[in-house]
Length: 158
Ligand SMILES: CC(C)(COP(=O)(O)OP(=O)(O)OC[C@H]1O[C@@H](n2cnc3c(N)ncnc32)[C@H](O)[C@@H]1OP(=O)(O)O)[C@@H](O)C(=O)NCCC(=O)NCCS
Picture (cartoon, rainbow, N blue to C red):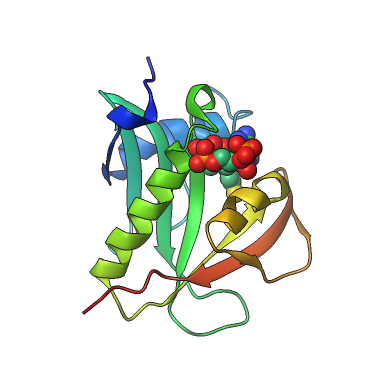
């Protein structure tokens, strides 16, 4: 049973821990025995993060080392951002995103950009977290309309 955001534990997570919630929230049409794997999920420089309420994963996101399209600079692509419907709009996604970006900035401070393909409905969430739209609207087949969005990684004090 999901609990309030105050009791959350935020940490990195193995791929297997994040896939069920990613699938349930972002690919609800998948058959019950199929999980939403993304290419690169198990690469060593891919980092998955989760929010746990007790033993239950209630939010997930993943950061893939992939330059933004039409650029060559190393960057983190944020993918699979998903919060369990029972705890959406309670600040869980905000806390997980901020935690992950700060942790990731420590992992490699030379990477200064994070970008994502944002579902149209999630654009206000990303804007609140400093992302701006950097593309025209485009369709991802089977998922719907998206905008590419990007922001600088958190700057850490030396
Ligand atoms: C988008 C999402 C990750 C935000 O996490 P969250 O914990 O609900 O967000 P927070 O509570 O930190 O921030 C609240 C804001 O998130 C956005 N939001 C909330 N529920 C949402 C939903 N079902 N879909 C899209 N955005 C949503 C709204 O902008 C909301 O602001 P409001 O409460 O003023 O309306 C989460 O709602 C979610 O998993 N949505 C469904 C899947 C999705 O759209 N993922 C993004 C793929 S690009």
